[in-house]
Image (cartoon, rainbow, N blue to C red; front, side):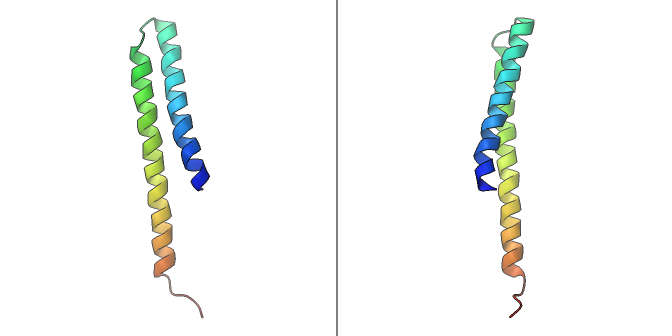
Amino acid sequence: MYSSMGLELGLSVVVGFLIGSWLDEWLDTKPWFLLVFGVSGIIAGYRSIFRLVKRVQADSDQEHDSPSSS
């Protein structure tokens, strides 16, 4: 689970920059779409990591709060 965090952030950023670059080439609008989609990719990556961390913390809290069967 933890190893996917870095991969997810990296892929979000790369995909954002690739889409922006492709749109800039296609529409001849350099560098606007690259900037917009690059920033969007960064935000999406950090949002994804934030959700994953919240889920891990919730699982940890739930595991900690549950009574152990001894």
